[in-house]
Amino acid sequence: MNKPHIKSPSSSIYALKKEQADNTIYNNKKSNSITLILIGIIICLILIIFTLLMKSVNNVEYKKNEQINIIAIKSKPIDVINNKIKTEIITNKTIQEKSFLTNSDDKIEISEEIKIVEESINQEEIDKLKNKTLDINFNNKINEVLINIENHKYDLARKNLDEANKLKSNEIIIDELDQRIEAGSQQVKLNRLIKKSQYEENNENWTSAINYYNKILQIDSNMSSILVNKKRSLIYQNIDQNLNKVLNKPERLQNDKVFEGAKQLLQSVKVEMREKKNLLYPIQKTPKLNSKIIKVESIINQASIPITVTIVSDNLTEINIYKVGKFGKLIEKSLILRSGSYTIVGSRSGYRDYRKILKIDTKNPSIIVRVECREAI
Image (cartoon, rainbow, N blue to C red; front, side):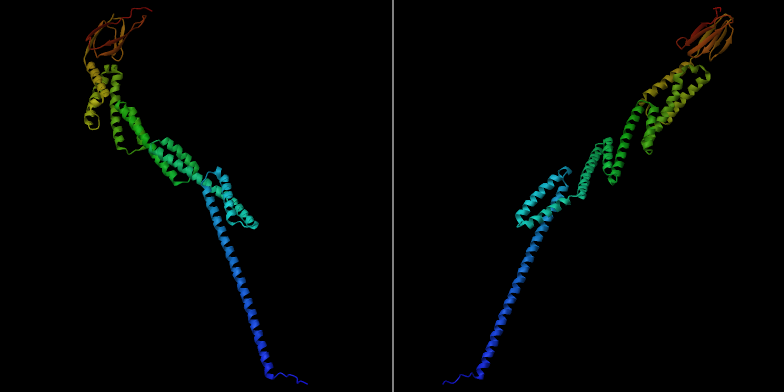
């Protein structure tokens, strides 16, 4: 009979330790596997986040491009905005589909972005475009104003400025151009009045010239040359009016007082022209005035020559010579008269009056006139 095998105590302890060691190694391997799995999960999450960020950046760039397109559209005329928007949306949609679309979710996202772009062209954008168009039209009108001012076409410039003012009434340049147009218009008006005044003065129409000078001075009261011209014209006007008193009614010189006054007037004219020769023109530049002076001198000289007029009557007729005197009934009377026209009236009771206009001059130094009332009533 064999003896049973009995393990020694040392062998049991060894086996126990070995088992514990194996368990420790197993646990370590299991822990390492879990760690690796966790690391892998973290890496995957990082990659997913990175991918989403890149996609977001691309979407931002896309939207920026859309905004740039919108800004470009604003500079176009209003009537092509809608067509431009549709073209840009279709083009960008095609590019987006080719570059980014991978599934139906992306298609939905892009469609929403397109909708956002469409809605971005709102009333505010249209208002901005209208303002830009308004600025362009306003600037064009201002340019027309400046061109017409440069060409001295102030009426057209005023019309253009009124149109610009209707577009924008609060611009500083409106007031500035208004002042320039006003100044230019006034200068044109002044030049026209000066030209007319010179024409009237050259033709010795002194009263008309003075009227133009007054209009000029109403615009600019400090024009020294016009003040001098007006003063000179006033002197000539006074001289001309005094000479006309003699020329228009030379018969008045038949009166001794009027005759003496005419001589003094002519003398005063000559004195005034001599004393104010530095202001007045040389006599050869005023031929009309010079001719009047010569005529007045001739009238006065003729009036100075005595002419003998003999009145013969029947001693029954009352004789009266207007502006000379009443002589009553006479047979013959000699008078010394000046050249001119005289009205002689004879009257007698029961007879028709006798009336005669007698014209005498130095060509006939002695005249005989019969005055009798012979026609019975």
